[in-house]
Amino acid sequence: MRARGRRRIVGVAAALLAVAGCGGEPVADAEDPPASPTSPSHAPFDQHVVMDGGRRVGMYYSPGRGLMEQHVDPGDTAWSKPHVVHRTTADPCGSMKLMAFDGVVAVIADWGPYCADGEPPTESLAAVGEKNRSAWHTEVTANFDGWEKVTASGNAQQLTFTRRSVERLTQLRWDRANGFAEVEDIRR
Image 1 (cartoon, rainbow, N blue to C red):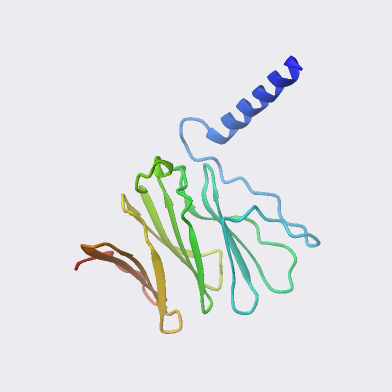
Image 2 (spheres, helix red, strand yellow):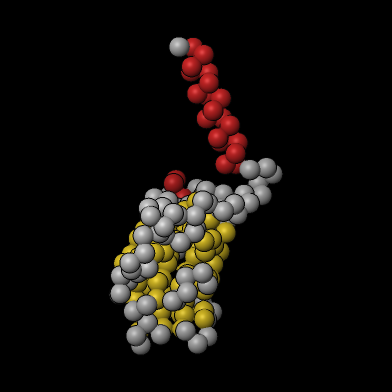
């Protein structure tokens, strides 16, 4: 019984060291095994959406790597290989939002060392994926309380990420022609 407990502790310690990596550097972007054509394979998603036409997109936080995305087209049984949308070694805040708008996927995700204790994130991500999910438009705002919602206009030609407070409206606009604009901080 005693030896069994020691083995379990040693195994947990080894797993923690493997996840931590060396010197605080990001863990290498090792390929996850590809999904077989006969069985779906994906990580447990933190958020998942079904788009018009049946395409499914799932995202999850991966410790030491960042924000990961996988998708599957209608009629396919295999999910795509995991794709890094945003690379970071910071701790996820667990507040991810994933929304689909007329062929476009919008993501809000946050990271920070003390989010679990109620501190604001140190990295707030706004990301947009179009038809080809291997290319994502991303914008990171540092030391910001995080985006609250996304709205679409013009058949999802334009998206607006917003955060409202009593004193301010902060917004970030994205459009298909120009990508992300500068963050606007409007006093109310």
